[in-house]
Amino acid sequence: MHIPRLPLRRSTAFRHLSTRPPPTSFTAKASPRQTLSHPEEIRGMPPLTPRTAVNKGKIDIGDSGRKEVFEAFEGPSRPRLIYERPGGRELPKVRGTAPFVIALGLLGLGWGLFLLHATNSERLSSSVLRQATFQLRNSKEVIALLGENVRLVDEWWALGSPWISGTINLMQGRVDLSFRIKGSKGAGTVYFTSIRPQEQGAWRIVRYKVIADDGQVIRLEDQAIRPEQKSTN
Picture 1 (cartoon, helix red, strand yellow):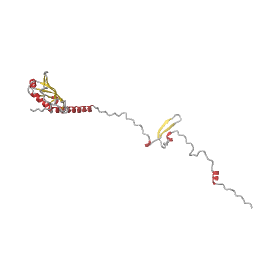
Picture 2 (cartoon, one colour):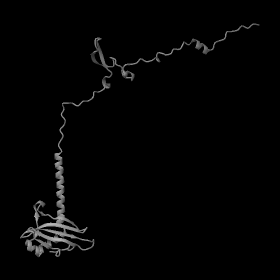
Picture 3 (cartoon, helix red, strand yellow):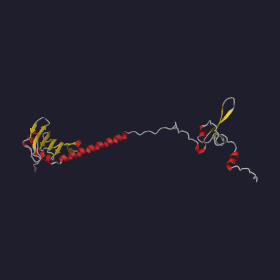
C-alpha cells in the first residue's frame, strides 16, 4: 500500500528569518549627528534662532549683504553685564583721626594726674611724714636755720597741697622721702631715708638731713624718730 508523503511544515523561527528584511548598518536615530558650529547647542542651550533669541540688529558682512545677529538668551536667563563703578560719583570723605587721638591723649593725661594726686595724698597722710614734720617743728637746729613756724610748702601745681616725693613701704621695710619746708627765715629741702634690715627688726635711719636754699646742711640722723615710734603733740 502506497502512503503519500506530506510536505514538511517549516518552523516558525525559519519563517521569521526568511521574511525579515536585510539589516541596515544605521537607523535614523543611530545615524551620526551633524556637527554643530555653535557649542551652546551641543551643551543643550537654546539655539540661535529668531524665535528664542533677541535680535541685536544687522551688521555688514561684505558684498553678500547683511546678516542678523542674535543672542542666545533673553529675559531672566540673559547674563547680566559686569557692574562698573560710576565715574562721576565722588568718594566719601574720610574723617580725620586727630580728634580721636586728642581725646585719647587727654583721657590718659587725666588718669595719670589722678594717680599722682592719689599717691601724694597717701604719703601726706602717712604716720612717717607726721613724725618727721613733728620733729622738724621742734628741732632747735632747724628753727635756728629756717626760723619759727616750720611747715610744709604748698605747691600751686599740686592743687595747693604739699608735694611729697619718694615711696613709703612699711611692709617691705623701706621709706625714702623728700619734701620742701619753710620757716620765717627761709626754706629748704628735707631728705629722709630709713630701712628695716629684718622683718621683725628695728628701723635704721640711713639719711635724714635738711639742705637750706642758701646751701647750709643740717644732719638729723641722731635725733630722728624711728618710723615705728609714735609721736604726740
